[in-house]
Image (tube, rainbow, N blue to C red; front, top):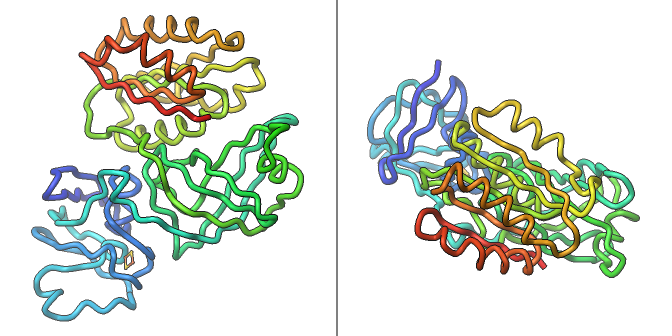
Length: 325
Ligand code: FES
């Protein structure tokens, strides 16, 4: 049976299924509450029950004394719900609320798209998943010592599997090492997260995403998180690329468009530097949803051009820019 958990401070709520923990239900719904180990050891997810009946608590090592339990304290990562719940939990709202974490992860998958594009998935330990906000980055160190700070392309609702998108670049040793030397099961070090290009998930407005080639990684994370918060919001994805191969996950864009109520996927091929063409297409979409929040990520030439051409839009919706070069 499904119940509802409501957070007293923000008023946000989310459904919780039978046998699901409060933490898992919150993350699935795109609601971030403070947590650490996810296995009942650290106490970071301590929350307080104000109303309702919790379900049976799963065993945990962290010691909650009797006075704390009598006062309603419980561990969100170990507690289920037997009724609707009203709770006090520490919510993560801003990038600076997310602590720096260092985690050793393993390469789970290497998906090549042609010769030049690699989608890398790494798995964190179940007891040490990465906490981050959609749109943030993390620094990866490969077994050979090569290091790069990359956008995380996956949803924070799954901190266990993290995805990164790499384009082969003759002048850059990191993608070369990833393409040539990385194998499934290899260990990589993660350090982060960093970055403030995150989703304004308290905004009720429509959302327009403008992105360029591999910057789709950040956009994908934002969209996956946005969908987990609210499936039905009007959304447009304009993905710019110099050739069709650089729309390497176009199937995903089409799948969103097929399955969601009001989602339009608009792949656009552009000549190098022809940002005007892309911004005209953006303005066309804004005619239909004039108060949308706009998220632009890509080369700084694109974000700078967007900052100028879309400046008037700031009176109606927000404009977020993330230069990625
Ligand atoms: S997250 Fe560590 S005890 Fe719940």
